[in-house]
Image (cartoon, rainbow over all chains, first blue to last red; front, side):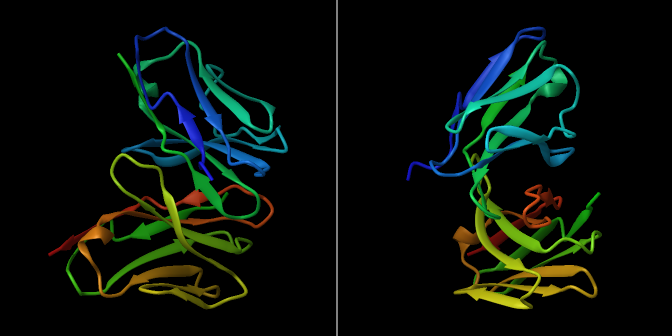
Length: 111
Length: 112
């Protein structure tokens, strides 16, 4: 199995630009999670989907963040407009039961 | 909501020694407790987990214990090796709810 796939692995953008992060979950998994990791706040859950439906988006910091899951094999996390404080590593994880499996992450730097 | 506290934040041991990391949780309804290992530049990797109907679980050099009454659980690594050096995270959730709450992480360094 290829595991959770994320792209891009690194993204550098200027403040105000739109950023789109992509995730392909493990085949057969029905839940997908987006996390953000920073030194100050650790690992934070932003949003998660079950069977492509958003279940809990209470971790999404503000309206600049949005996530979609148009089908079982693809999800996006979009930030528009981006700000320097959005700089972090963003992880996608998927699961079929309790065990969540993480992707390699996208390191986002907003200058 | 759930709150997970993890200690210590850093742990340094000699190769061959044991390492213990402890976590406490606040929500008595939590019933699933995984541990993740994160190496530099990589995503967290699930290494072991325990459910509330079990008090202890072991997998080779790694073991996890759970005390539901006290609401704490621990990770034990025996015969540590340099490749065990990483950041370790505990987490807690309510099964079927899906949402994991993570501890702050422990940086484990194993000196050869």
